[in-house]
Image (cartoon, rainbow, N blue to C red; front, top):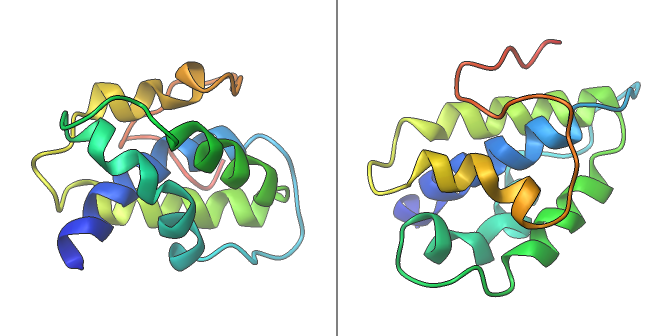
Length: 116
């Protein structure tokens, strides 16, 4: 289970950063939610399979994290797990929003400041 959560966090970082654009008041999106949405992306970011059904999860997470606190929570979750799994292709994870048609105005990176 830990092997799945870590790669998902990297994918979630990309999605969380994409979601971090809109403001909110209280965070309701936790790491469990992020992992749930992005689990279908794991085979893609670990170079095992094609994109498959990943985009529905990316778009679902983007839609679920509507407030700034939610986006910051998703970002923090993804960052905390990003360095824990070595098989994840960070370039593929960072490219997920674009691959899935989710437009975000910033670069997705583990060095992104989630507080902004």
